[in-house]
Amino acid sequence: MCQLLGMNCNTPTDIVFSFEGFRRRAGLTDCHSDGFGIAFFEGKGVRIFRDNKAGHSSPIADCVKQYHIKSFNVIAHIRKATQGAVTIENTHPFIREIWGENWVFAHNGNLTSIPDMSESFCQPIGSTDSEAAFCYMAEQLKNRFRKKPTEEEIFQTIQEITKELAQNGTFNFILSNGNWMIAHCSTNLHYLTRKSPFGTAQRIDDDDVIDFREYTTEKDKVTIITTFPLTKNEPWIKMEHGGFVFFKDGDKVYEVLGKATASIDDGTLGLAKIA
Amino acid sequence: MCQLLGMNCNTPTDIVFSFEGFRRRAGLTDCHSDGFGIAFFEGKGVRIFRDNKAGHSSPIADCVKQYHIKSFNVIAHIRKATQGAVTIENTHPFIREIWGENWVFAHNGNLTSIPDMSESFCQPIGSTDSEAAFCYMAEQLKNRFRKKPTEEEIFQTIQEITKELAQNGTFNFILSNGNWMIAHCSTNLHYLTRKSPFGTAQRIDDDDVIDFREYTTEKDKVTIITTFPLTKNEPWIKMEHGGFVFFKDGDKVYEVLGKATASIDDGTLGLAKIA
Image 1 (cartoon, rainbow over the protein chains, first blue to last red):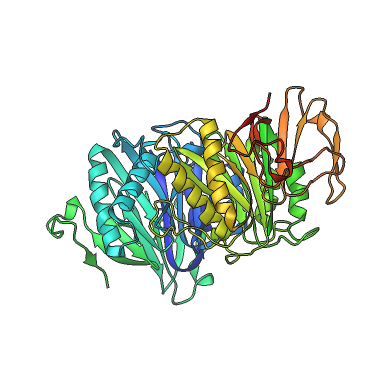
Image 2: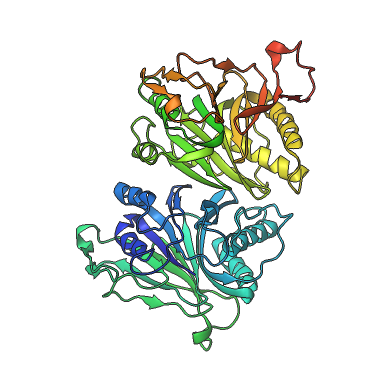
């Protein structure tokens, strides 16, 4: 299995505090040492850094730390291989062009079966279930909509495709087009939104402390999504199994609750618009 | 306009000697300062580093230099913008998945017209003529062949598509799938193959000297393709206008000569197999 980290904000934000805790789990505080990757959106463009070395000691990860890239949307992944060798082409996050946008995807889980894609327009390059699932999603989206539909339609269609794929295993994922970020929880995914009034946070993995008041303005909103909480003293929300969230500008815009809250959810592919 | 650099070898090779001369042209010895990018194939995977800062001073380019990544196939580009803002999404090389492989493309030139791709499966993300041309190429290849054809068929089809696109401007490019490298010369492109017996080379841009005997074995073959020669004392071959070459493992496998040698070329899309 693996661990996921996502960030969606309303102001370009440096993810280094979160990433430095996260990447300790790639060989120091946990065993997700089979490569790492991190994608930073910059406008419609993306910078992706990947390494098949362990994230905690990778020189590429050191380079990422050094340059303090600020971004509205970031997706990172540390890998514990289940399917596919420890190679660059099997290293998340994966990227594909959809409707003239870069879409970036990272997965935690294991899917035992994916539809045949050997003659698809969008084919996997490596041998992971994760990339194949993302390609299936891209192919389906492009087949259903030749031009980019509304965000609501995108969110609903992704739920439909996800439910199909998730029948074959565990499918926690984070997905972004550089504008919004969608997260799906199959088993483990947590999030929190940092906003005014800002305070301090202490990392779980090495006890390092940050005072966000030194780095923020009153208007800033920064949502962090991660497999397991990264800090000790913040109100992380555990997503329900089967739940979906849609974040934009650091705000939760849509949410579909999962199994543990079936009495609240209407059971359809509906949307709960968040004010 | 821009400048191109490609490397195709039969052994994993460090491109730093060539790249360090090349990137001086991005702000020091020439004016190609509108971003740079470099893609290293590693198996079926690719590491791409891009920056919208000038290549000669970019911290990302410094990071590339520092890690001495060895690869069989590398494509780099320094940009002097003609179409499209100086942003990451407009920075070469561009990458797309074709038949389950990463294909990497960099262009020097200017195309004044590209077929409409607003409903294509493969769409450009940025606003350059270069990325749009590459997407058109990818779409055409996938439409004509649902599964990967032979290398000869690929080379011939790329010639056909190139001739169509090149009607609308200057179209020097380097293209690789991580296995082979294809170069097309519209106006300026040079290459040379370094092989045993190796000697020394002196860079044009800063006079730095390397003795390849210290880094090579007798079996090594390293082909370098570039807009203008990088060294003073090596036998660079200037490609003819309209010419195509196909390199694999550092060897020139196929060549189609251009206009200046029309009396040798048979004028069709034929192949001259090189022993």
